[in-house]
Length: 68
Image (cartoon, rainbow, N blue to C red; front, side):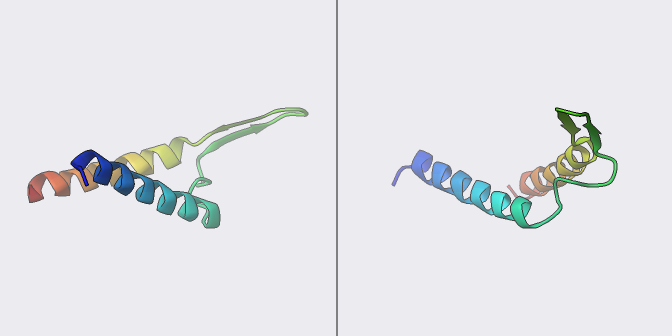
């Protein structure tokens, strides 16, 4: 199997696990996320979730960079 094939399979597995986690946890609905509900529309902006995800990904990439 080529390197690209393995990478795509790994990316698919990671996305699957993240999807399951988001489905069964309140990970995407943290306090501080902006939700505006009107009569016929809802606007949702996950600002705190984005900040937390950015910090976690930065730490992961930092550790991977040090490990390489």
